[in-house]
Amino acid sequence: MTMKGVNIYKAARQRAHMTIETASEMLNVAPRSLQHYEAGDRETPDEIVAGMMQAYNAPYLGYQHLRASPVGKVILPEVCDISPARCAIKTALAAEHVPDIAKTMLAIGEDNRIDKSELATLQQLQASTRKLVGAFFSVLILSGEKENATRRAPSGVQMKDEM
Image (tube, rainbow, N blue to C red):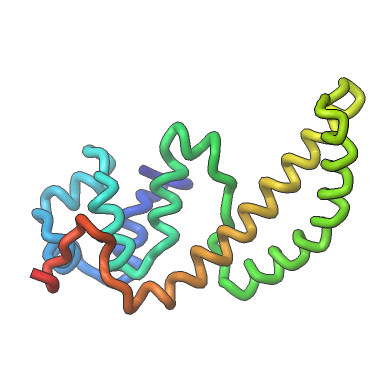
């Protein structure tokens, strides 16, 4: 899977300063298989991505992987991949509008109908809410990079150093 022309798995491995050989050993996969995943020749299984997230200390990779799927594109909001501090500021600024959004949503929904006159406002509220959720996800994912450095791989993923 690529984002902006760069394979997300290869970019994460390179940011972790790992060679194909080191990464494949940690992930318990053949170097050739890892090359196929990074070239986009094969679909990368979720279990392998979970291992990459842990091995590369890259929780953001899991989100990118999910968002690249057809369902993820529809459901998951965009997140920023800037520093956790900047994401926190962006989230705090977006959160200032929550009371107004909530009041307007209550006003629209109190009669359990959406009139044509309310539709444009509701769509704007949905877009604002989506941005806010994306900002919160950004903080959670990026702050998890430091936290994840000491975590083990999810169940079902056996890292080589655990064997």
